[in-house]
Amino acid sequence: MVDRFIFTVSDRTGITAESLGVTLLCHFPNLEFKTVPLPFVDTPEKARDAARKINESSEKNGGPPLIFATLADDEIREIIAASNGVLFDLFDHFLAPLEKELGLESEHSVGSSHGVLNPNKYTARIAALNFTMRSDDGMNAVDYDHAELIIIGVSRTAKTPTSLYLALHYGVSAANFPLLEDDLERARLQDKIIRHRKKLFGLTIDPARLRKIRQARYDKGRYAQLRQCEYEVAQAEAMYRRERIPFVNTTAKSVEEIAATILHKINLNRDLM
Amino acid sequence: MVDRFIFTVSDRTGITAESLGVTLLCHFPNLEFKTVPLPFVDTPEKARDAARKINESSEKNGGPPLIFATLADDEIREIIAASNGVLFDLFDHFLAPLEKELGLESEHSVGSSHGVLNPNKYTARIAALNFTMRSDDGMNAVDYDHAELIIIGVSRTAKTPTSLYLALHYGVSAANFPLLEDDLERARLQDKIIRHRKKLFGLTIDPARLRKIRQARYDKGRYAQLRQCEYEVAQAEAMYRRERIPFVNTTAKSVEEIAATILHKINLNRDLM
Image (cartoon, rainbow over all chains, first blue to last red; front, side, top):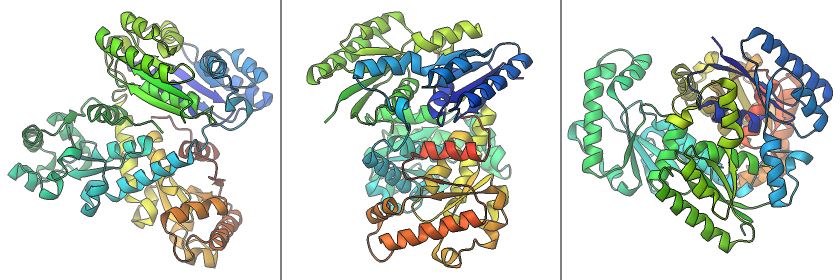
């Protein structure tokens, strides 16, 4: 059951509009949204086509659809504004005041957006991503000297997506290393890891949630049993505390939120790329 | 030389504020910004501390700093608004009207944001990411049956970051496969790839840019020579055209933009996750 249709309308890729919509709608977790991206709406004809789609959906649903738009052309914007949807226009609210404050026309008015902003940053981001891919899940131990951050945790605590997110969005060379049965039994980290203590960050999770995630993956043997999950989590957390490794519980957090929390806790002030 | 300082101020992780700031500032590619995230500003005391940091930076720079904020508490917001920065408040402009339209208080006012929105979507996203990791760069050919999309291209055309971005942000199971010397010489795709023709999407790039990227990686032998880059790109594009494989030139595009363009061209209507 969809509560509202969301249209993201843009004369280019629509990433700005879509990202704004997603970040705003995150704040209404109890509603079910269905998002329809309408990118590359760059002629009045395409705008009329988009308006028609918006109107059709508004007939099918209780509330009017919401429209998040970045449209530079006045004629196109007016066609969309005249539809049955409720328009939230990023350009009106933010870009125009920003242009005034910065004393510059934004590129949105004149051409491309979301291109390769800064080639050096771009290269750094790709380098970080390559590093993170190479050193995923304990592969290639020789690389830890080059890591800015090493994320540790038992299986299925979101180490890999968190590392990749940090590399892709913040250019952080984030390795990750699994805590395996041996480490947990001895309740000690391997030497090759513990000697990078200052770079370590632990992930933990509620055992019941961990069990569900593991069950979906591999439902045989001890791996997905609640008792095993409880044991591994308890051993990992005890180890984090004893070794004074900062850690975060990922149970109710999105990958974005885990990443932001880690950067804040380790005081790594890094631009979003 | 930094043209403006940007502060993203939030009572929580600051992801919403930061993402808004980045998407807006993308539109001013000729200015150099320095972003300072100030997350977890959730008491008047921390707000005064944040305002002090903002004021200190405004003394050092030409223009006043820009502040992108998501602050639910009035007292905290007023402290920030009274600083020397120019405040762009997401809550005022969008969340409040959205609350009115949806007839609901946003979670921002009452608790967590950016959490795990929808557990099913979250699981799908992680599954897509695992698939993409497993099938990166031609590994594990047996998996192509499960791919929703197979990205092909010569070395260093952004296949891996694009695949990961599509998996992480849209939950698309995107494999990628490199076009190697043999494929290019024969100007034919391997059977195990061409039989998935409908899932194929090609990347291409200007040879001069490709040379620069390759030089930064490995500057020996033919790999980074302009002539070799020109040859590989020409062969790849000829093959895309002959096999009627859609493709996009990535030269001036960010990973976000490449991903959005692919989804649009293959008509894969997928929610941003």
